Amino acid sequence: MTNSFAQALNSSRFIVTAELLPPRGADPDAIKGLSESLPSDLDAIVVGDNPDRIRGSAISAAVLLGYAGRASVILSMATRDRNRIALLSDALGAAALGISGLVCMSGNHQSLGICKEAAAANDFDSVQFTQALKKMVLRTAGKYRNEHESVLDLQVGATAHPYLRPMELNLIRLKKKVTVGADFLLTQAVFDLDEFTQWMDVVREAGFDKRTAIIPSVLPLTDSNKARTLQKSRTYGPIGDEVVERIDNARNPAGEGVAIAAEAASRLKNMPGVRGIHILSGGCESLAAAVIKQAGL
Image 1 (cartoon, rainbow, N blue to C red):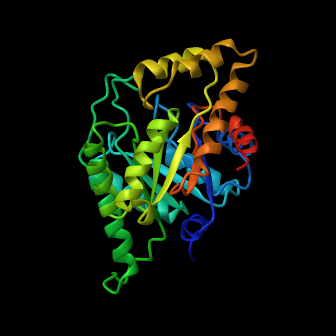
Image 2 (cartoon, helix red, strand yellow; image 1 turned 90 degrees about the vertical axis):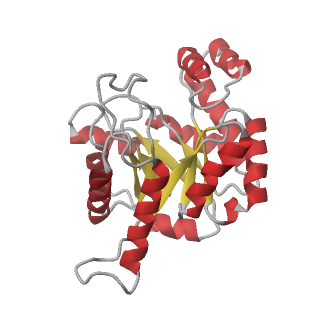
């Protein structure tokens, strides 16, 4: 049976997803608490895979979300930490446990505060991982399927960085992900709407929005220190001084961060070629509901 996230992708309606980051501990009730802080009518919850520090197992968290009654759970998998054997084995295990989709990503370099002493695998890059997963999905759906294989009901996604320049190189990498069959693309957090619009114009001109679901992300910043850190690192592309100043001068910085994210989401949802909005949590899952309400999602 087609999973509910697949049904959303195959429909024409607008998609709303949100991120959940596994806690650093091993308490299953913590996962349940985080799940309850997210709106119940999301099209999917996307579980992060150690994006910023060593956290609990993303696969375990995703399965616990399923036990908690969440209809569609998408698992992020970073090629940084596993070779191709582990990646594909874990992907099959996740599908067997009811995970609806996977997001193939390279992952931030381990030296950026995650674990500087760790050695990276990087056996696959994110394009190769996407391609390998799509081949597995297509094989299990086809007539050459092994009698011991079941149909792999799994949506395969990847990430896109709208702010990488020059645009020509950005488009080359994006084309690779679309060509190997990514069902959806989650973008980095959008703060600069003008540069994102330039990128979307190029995406539409190339026809990529007709071949995959483009889902831009927004991130509610909770304080000015975090805003300045991200502005300096350019992890999510350009963050304007006006964004930092708004949060810095606000009586309620987290509330202002929600307002900024909601304003971005409101503009993005009306942009041609955009299929949905993904709300990054940064570990503050409870803010997603406010972003959705203020943005009219």
